Picture 1: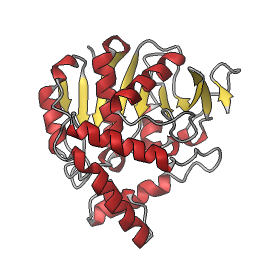
Picture 2: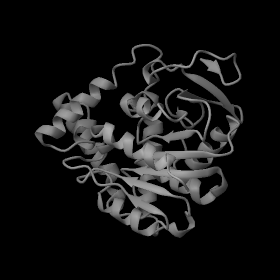
Picture 3: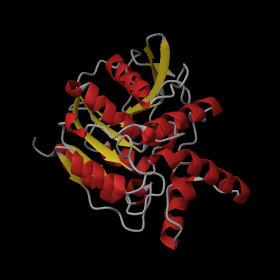
Picture 4: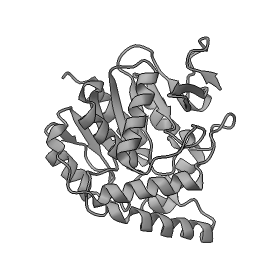
Length: 291
């Protein structure tokens, strides 16, 4: 892997070809990939439960990177990043801020998916000057309905996946309809497009820490979302089982500058992957709109 300060390499044209690099964050190496134009405010992607670099839909990353510098990374202890994964969302947010600053960035946009959306909310509230705009997808506020049930649902569907020899994302991220099953299979095929320099899978200890952090987030008192004064785009599928879609409406209503994207029909937690073309267009329009 190349260090962040190594000699420049040609700019990749697609996420499947983006080199995996690393940067030292207080003595711990965090791995990341980036692509897209180097000017403008970078867009940092914050990942979902159990996800590593290879779990971002290349159609979403490539689409966003046509206009924006996009950076994906593994937080502490996840995938090939060093250290131990913390078991609170707040600690994950602090690590993400340290990573962003280690890249020499002082102004970013954030796209947080599911657990990444929890982290994005904390970053925006605690480091408001660091953030310009946020996109929150398939996520909800602290104490949101159903979030404390994510652990049980995840373990149940992971077991179901093992028994049926299917990827649990098929059940967790997509509806149990013909179009939902088809969209799930299509995503799983896209996630295989990168064949070299693939990331390490998440460890069991890191997975457990993330589950504990999500449950704590779900059991917290309702957050004061008025602290987040940034423009925020909120997106989801209409039938999210993991973070129930009612949380999407709640976020958009309680955020002072929240904007609700039309919920994707016959779509669940992976709505932005199922409707990747529509999501990318909406996200780019939001990120490029005047303040």
